[in-house]
Length: 117
Image 1 (cartoon, rainbow, N blue to C red):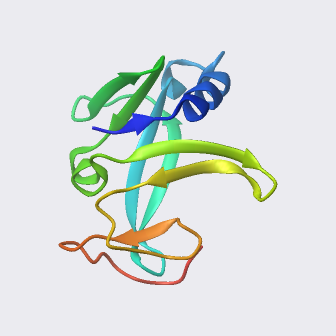
Image 2: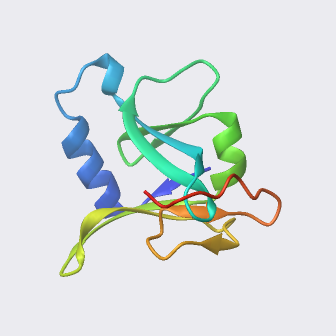
């Protein structure tokens, strides 16, 4: 399962409000790449039958099974401070992360390291 902090949930509810059915859920995904092997991704999307679906603090979160294997137990946070604003994924499965925090690998999945985007 994935969790959201209060600040992430509030920002996501604000972003989703007024969107159509095809953008009513937060999709978390992982793709090969980044300097550590995998890169995180987030998008507003419609749920698919094969997705794991979680209703968290008023936000529908969807994750495909392959991604869930890599990010299970993660927390999505939203930060707005002097260093900038944006979402962060805190992944307890990551054994290595890049300096920017958008790329990772796990002890059992190395991914396909490349350049950081």
